[in-house]
Image 1 (cartoon, rainbow, N blue to C red):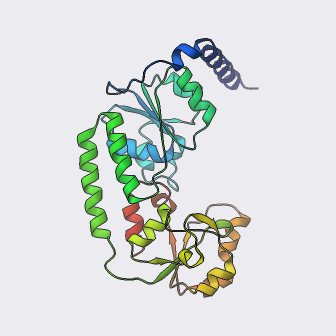
Image 2 (cartoon, rainbow, N blue to C red; image 1 turned 90 degrees about the vertical axis):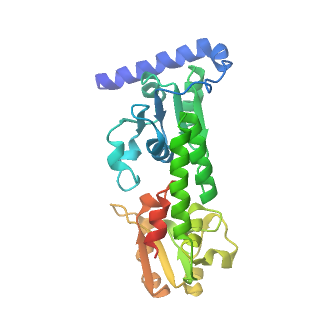
Length: 277
């Protein structure tokens, strides 16, 4: 075992022991919401981007390592200006943050340990609609004490949404991903589709969320446009389904849309909407 790995494990054990000893007192400590945080850490790809858009210079000290991935992050270049974290409690604790922003699907034990160590951790639900994106901009702006920056970003986003609003019926479209999944109206992808002026064939089958759609039903629906995610390196059997010749015959137009503009509920969905035009 390398010395760095041994050190990391020892540090994790020390932090866990400290949390167990101090647990009750720290767990009952009042939240630090009154003061504007000076050292903020984000440990979620989507909160990374909202935080980078809103934080004051020097206020945000670390974002997740995924924020640097240009296939997943719309702000990969900007993210390289911040320290990267991997969502581990010990590395985040050593950054001495006074606010940690996590996503709802973050590791529960990590969040619990950080809180027991006395850190303020705010957990945000994923933004799955334009209304939810607006609410998250306001929420993160309040967490950072950046109300004016949030109001400015919100105004620019609202103007973009108004410009992108559908002005014509562009026909019927299908969203189709690896392993034969599709998304309905109650998802971010579904809202992007509707905002661009398309009718989602998922509604024909009573699908409102993200679930499996047999290829036979997609082909029978005969959509005007078929939208799939960008391909990833490797030989994924799940993605091999997207190369099936039946899909090429199912719709006259195929749009391979960059995943990074779709994956998170941020103002960058405006680029995804524009790409569909």
